[in-house]
Amino acid sequence: MNAMSKDTLTRFVPPQAKTEMLQIIAFLEEFGDELEGSVELSAPNPNLRMIMHLMRGHLEAKVVTPTSLISASRVPYATANRRLKEMVDAGMIEQRPRTKTGKSFSMHPSDTLMDHWAQMSSRLRRLATGAFGGKDTPQETTDYYFGGSYLNAQSIPPLKVLGEPLKLAGGLRVLVHGDPTFMVMDNLKRQFEQAVGTQIHQRAFSIDRLREEAIRNAARKASRYDIIAVDLPWVGSFADQGILMPLEEAMDVASLDPADFHTAGWQAAHWGGRPYGVPAQTTPELLFYRKDMFAEAGLEPPATTDELLEAARVLHDPQRGRHGIAWNAARGTALGHTVLMTMADFGQPVLDLPANAGGFDTSHLNEGRYRATIDTEAGLRAAEFLMDLLRYSPPDILSMSWYERVRPYAAGRIAMAYGYTLLAPYFELDETSPAHGQTGYLPHPAGPGAKTIAPIGGYVMGIPANLPQERIPAAVEALMVFTSPEAQKLYVQNGSRTNPRYSVGADPDVRRLSPIFEAVDAMSWRDELQFWPRPPVPEISDIIQVCGEEFHDMLRGIVTPRQALRQSQERADAIIENNRST
Image (cartoon, rainbow, N blue to C red):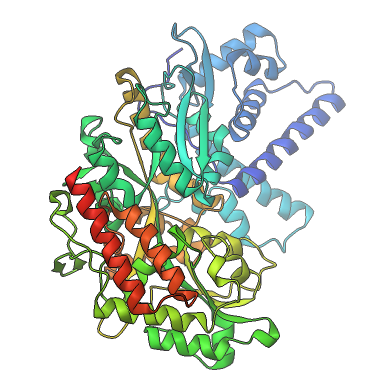
C-alpha cells in the first residue's frame, strides 16, 4: 500500500452537511441490513460497507484502521483485504502513518471519494424524495448539503488533514484568549487533532491573565506552549521583550499568502518591519444598531457622532426599559480601549503619529521617537462626547465591559452598541433575540472633520521565542493549519464572526451565514479598518489602563474632562519616560 503523500490533504465537512451525510449513511446501513437479512441470495457489498464505515469515522472524527475496515466489510478477511488494497490503489482511500516505524496506519477518504460520495448522496436524496414524497423540500437545502455550494469551485474546500502527523512529545500546547472564536476552536478539538495527527492541549484565559501568563512563560527556560495568542496592541512589547519569535526565523512567510489577509490585520502583526504572528482573528469594533427601531423612528444610520447622539436620544426610553446605547465603560482596560478608539473617532491618535493617506503611520514606532497626545482639543471633544453618551446609556454602564455591553443589546434592551464582531454570535445565532436578523453594521461614526474608521482588534498566533528548537517545525505546521482559509471558514460555520482573510469573507457559504462579512470586507476595501487607534508600542497596555482609570473618574463626576485629560497625559508621559530610562 502507498502511504499518503505530504501534499495529499483530506477534507472536513461543514456541520449541517455532516448531519445530512450521516443520515444517508445510516439509511444505507439499515437498508443493507434489511436487504441482506430478507433475501437469501443477497451478499454483502464489501466496498460499500468499508466506504460507509470510513465516511462515518471521518465525519465523526474517529480513527479508522485497516483492521476496522476489514471487519466492517462482512466478507472473509482475504476478500476484504484484497478489496481494500484495490480502493487504496485506485486513489479512493489514503493512509497516514500512526507510528514512527510506519507500520501502522490510519485510513482517510481521499478528495476523490469525498466528491463521489457527496454527489451520490445528493442523487440518492433526490431519488427518495421523488419516489416517496417530500417534494416540498427546498431545492436550495439539498443543493447546499450535497455537492452544492460547499463543494463549489468558488468555495473554500473543507479543512485538510496533514499527510504526516505532527511529532510533538506530549501533544500540541496552545495558549489562547477565552473568547467565542477561540472557544469554537476548542469545540472543534477532535477535528483539529485529526487534522494535525496529535493531541491538542488548549488553555484559555481572560485578556489580562493571558498577558500575564505569556510574560511568565517567556521567563521560563523552555516554553510550555508551542503557539500563543497575542492581542494586537501587545505585538511591540512582546517583540522587544523577546517573547515572540520573528516569523521569518521559523518559516517561509510567503507560504501564508500575506496578501489574503485584511491589510490592517497583517500590518498590525508587524514590529520594526518584521511579522511576529499570523492573524488568527481580525475583529473590528463596529456600531451595531437595530434596523427595525431606526425604521420605526424614521432615523437614518448615523455617520457622524452628532447623528449618533441624536439617534441615541430619540431611541432612549428608560420608562419602557430601553436605552439608547451601550459601550465599554468599566474601569481599567475596558474603558481605556473606548477612550483610545473615541479619540480616534475625532481624528486624534494616542501618540504623535505622522499622518498618511490611510490615517496615521505606525511603521517607525520601533525607533521609539514618540510621545503621548491625550491632552489635546480633539481629546477634549472625545471626552465630552463620552459624557454625552452617559445620558442615553443604561444605569449600570460604568460596570459594562466586553460582553456586558452586547448581552442587553441581544436581549432587546439597547438600540445601539459598540461591539467587536466576535460578539455578534450573541444575537446572530440566537433566533429568540429581538436583534436577530435586525442588526446593521457600521464603522464608528466620525467626529467633525475626522475620517470614518473601524478600529480593529483581535489576535495573532505566534511562536514563543523560547520554544525548544526541535518543536518549532511542528508548531509552524500547526500554526498554518489553524490560520488557513479552510480553518477560518470552519470557525465561521461553527459560530465565529471574526475573519482575517479576504478569501474567507468572499466565500459564498460564509456570506450566506452573516451580513457581517460583506460589511467588514467593504470597510477594508474603503480603508476604514485601522489599527493605529491602539498602536502596538511597549507602553500601550499601561497607557490604556491609565486612561481607563482617569476617564472613569471623569464619568463618575469626580474630575472634569480637562482634568482627566491632563492627568492621563502626565501619567502616560511618565510611563514612556520610565520605559526609555530602563
